[in-house]
Length: 239
Image (cartoon, rainbow, N blue to C red):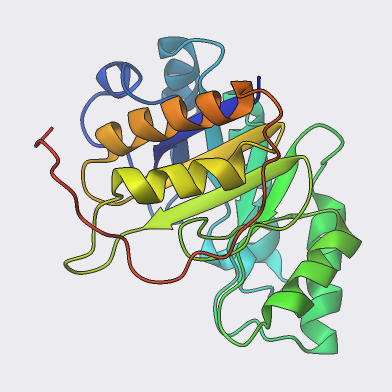
C-alpha cells in the first residue's frame, strides 16, 4: 500500500485540530517574522510521528541570488526542516529563474547544499520552463518535479509531489476527477498531495479512499494520464 500524505499550503486554526483531518502541512518561514525554534518543536510534538511537514524555501533562497541573506535564510530553513523532521523540502522557483545556463548552475549548486540522502527536494518551477526541459533537469539533479495531477501528467518515479489547484468557479474536485487523479497517483510508492481546492478535507478524504482502492485492485495497471480541463463541481457538502 502506498504512503499517502494529504494537506494544505497554510495552517488555519490550531494544529492539533488540523491534524485530525490532514497529515501534511507546508511550512513557510517569513524573513521578517521567522518561525521560532520553540514553535517548531511544539508543532512536532503536537502531531503523530506519521504527520509530515514539508518546508517551503523562502524567496530569498529560491530567487537563486547568492549572498549573505541567501546563506542565512537557507540555513534557517534547513534547521526548521531538521526540527520538524521534514522528509521533503519544496523549492519553488519564481518566473525570474529562467532556463539559462547561469540559473541551471545556481540551481545545481543550491541542491548540492541541501542534504537529500533522506530528505527529498520537490522542485516547482514557474515561468518559461518547458515541461520536458524541467523534467530532464529534475531527473539530472535528483529532484521530484511538482505538478498538478488534475491537469498534468506526473513524471515517472517512486515519489510524487502534487499541488491540486482550484480556480474560479471550477474550484472543487469532483468524484469523477478524483478517481482519475487517484489512478495516476496509485502507482507511486509515496505521494505528497497539497489540496488548494474548496473543501480540502472532503477532497483529501475522497482522494485517499480512491488511491487506496486503486492500489488494492487486483491486476490494476496504474497509468499516468494528462487530464485536461478545469476542476468540475459535483454535489458536495460544506465542511
